[in-house]
Amino acid sequence: MAAVAFRLGQRVHAAGDPARVGTVRYLGPVDGHSGDWVGVDWDAGAGGRHDGSLAGRRYFVAAGERSASFARPTALSAGITLPDAIRNRYRVEDFTKEEQDEMYVFSTSQKRVSVELVGKNKVEEKLKNLNDLTSASVSYMGVSSIGPGDELKNLVPNLRQLDLTGNLLSQWQDIFSLCEALASLEILDLTNNTMENDFTESSSVKNIRVLVLNYCGVTWELVEKIKVSFSCLNELHLMTNRIKIMMDVRLSDNPVADPAKGGVPRFVLIARLGKIKILNGSEISPRERREAEIRYVRLVMGKAESYDPEEIKQLHPRFAELKAFHGIEDEKPVSRTSGPQKMASGLISITLKCVGPSMGEKQPLTKKLPPATTVGKLKSLCESFFKLKDIKVRLYLEEEGCPLPQFLEEDTASLMDLGIGTGSTIIVDEES
Image 1 (cartoon, rainbow, N blue to C red):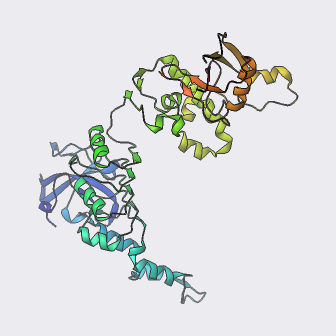
Image 2 (image 1 turned 90 degrees about the vertical axis):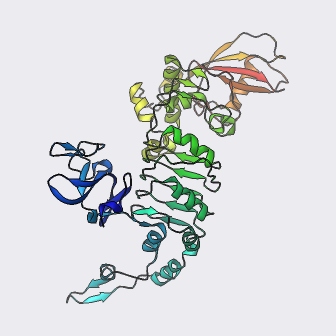
């Protein structure tokens, strides 16, 4: 294969090693060496030797000091089509000699004894008919193109989930063609496929619900285009991309920011988004951030017993960092014989304000309550504290920086579950 068979910006892998992936940055001669060469900038510095310069001459600029190397065209592969990759992964009737050897064991006399895999025939029969395949993974198999759309459609017409992690795809037109050919596809993982900025907003994709673009070199400008073309997305994963630090985030009228619709309150968003300065048009003061982060840590601590440490790490990636930063220690269980003084130390102090038109003018009250107090119990206490007869109470949490108080809708949720701690203010209103 000649160097002209490649193009600048093309994704390639080392021949015989689909997991060693890089980008073509130079095509042509190299001083002091005969023939044509391909300059490759390897992902994550995978076996590179220099930074794109050799013997005092710079041929291209690599991402790292030792992430680049020159290779003969024959030492590189331009990849295979997606249909070929699926056949290679899931068709099992053509075993190589090595694969056949793995289906034998040796007796004490060193004779090969055939091993019959239980259910093997059924598996082979099922995989011969790829029409039934609904989920496929062809990660790190050197997929560089989608191939003919009709071929892919006829091969796996019922595919709903596809993992293309670590392949050679880079052009969005291939992705649009893929989504068009596989009408049943809903989940698409393109992790570690460095995508070019050739996105055309005229394309419309309505079948994809989950799109994973981790480590794809995506910019925020590209995200803006994606959300238009992939109009039915429920999840978009963008870990480790070329997105600058977001300082101003607006999530108003989105379910993620509405606790009544299964979203999270303002303090959780502030704690989880460590770099933002403005949320929903309201500036985040240093005091609000500190209180939000402490409140968030205590919220997670209250749920820690229900999850193992790995689950906590996945669900709350900033928890350990914030817990250490604010010097919050694990709460020790209170002994039954510790007495009233110890029990009182576990209470939280909250302020209750009456605002209902039928409640009359009442002074705010500050009360100390157990963190396990539920919203339903607090309603009953408010009726007693403020002597409210025949009035159905509604409670709201007043939060700094939030223009509207948060409605506490779930009667079974505890103050701890809601992240309500000392210094919080609860608005006591009446049902209309």
